[in-house]
Length: 367
Image (cartoon, rainbow, N blue to C red; front, top):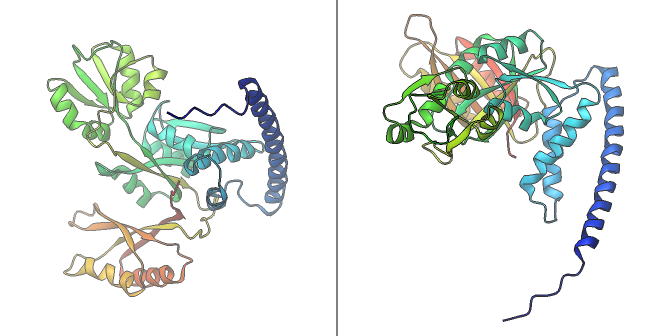
């Protein structure tokens, strides 16, 4: 058996070198912050928004491409999002509304996308997130769009149709659900409180392990954790972060039926305040259309896309609420409206549908 090579440095020497590197990193971060403040002054002069999602996406993509050390590429994005968040906050903290209370996946998505140096505004409902954003009370809202297990979040789609805000970014999270409770076991649980989507995503586990417990839908998983903290007969389905916030035991972890469960979130803003992001080469265009209720109508929607070589990545239908059994269609396209093929396809679609609304164009979450 070969001898283990002797370490090149002592532990004390390594710690000294790390301390030296940390000091140099801090100096460089302060240098970066100084340049960011100067950029902010220029933006004030020409009225540009402080936060540009396409610019931050390009910065992270470039750094991941040039990274050649032991640091994993997947670690680059969260590190630099925090750096950019701290630099933005030197001018003014970005105000972000999301479904609360503290400990929700929406909160986690907001911090993951913008960094932790934001002024977060937990909201009681998705409707309230849209209202706060549309009224200008916050700069951005973060809302759930779809889940890999349960599909689209219908309320978000309905509000995107009627609200003046549009989508400027997206982020997705792996969603791990946990059974949380004041007691250290699931014995005696009378009801499980969670958002309806979480209850559905854990249907199989609940049926097997708590078949007699009531499934009680509440406004958010974190609200379920708050209720469980006040009543020992209740359990909640929520994140470990929510459990920590409310002092609950994680009786069972990762109880979602799909181990690869993910939720996609949209970042929304007023177009008059935050202009549509510019193309990055990795973009998504979201729109909603309505067509006459006649044979071949849906097929006709696809013809302009095929003609111009535009890929459709999502198609969802929702009742138009006209009382006539009519539907609107939510469509995601690969590309940006400033890309020539997408622009041509959108022009043709706009000419043949009874309703056309562009819901947003934004960088794809590739991190």
